[in-house]
Length: 148
Image (tube, rainbow, N blue to C red; front, side, top):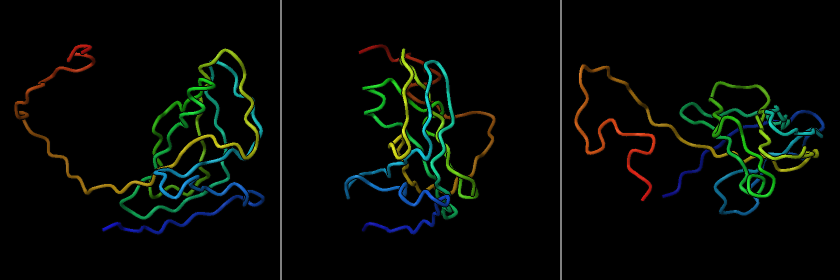
């Protein structure tokens, strides 16, 4: 059975046209839009304001992810991907964008720049132990399983 979670949000005055929304009813993420015109220069990270303020329930996070079309067509991504918005944060949601391309990318107000997925978090308790159990992988990482 699907659970519905209610999340409160508000918009900076004058940004009501930039509300987060899903392009299709069955999308996983809400599109986030820029509230400013900004030139995203190559080789730099820049903070892009959205006008969005969010109030997540305790036990939830918002993950901010890149848009695949901007990545493929314009070499744009998010510097910290996915970005995490914690339940206690009440400031404006900002998107840290990075331009991997060779040319400046002009972001216009209202342009979709990122996606937001709301995720439920389990209650987790960490236990410090002297030794971890064995596994088939062990300490292998960073490509240790080969290329095939």
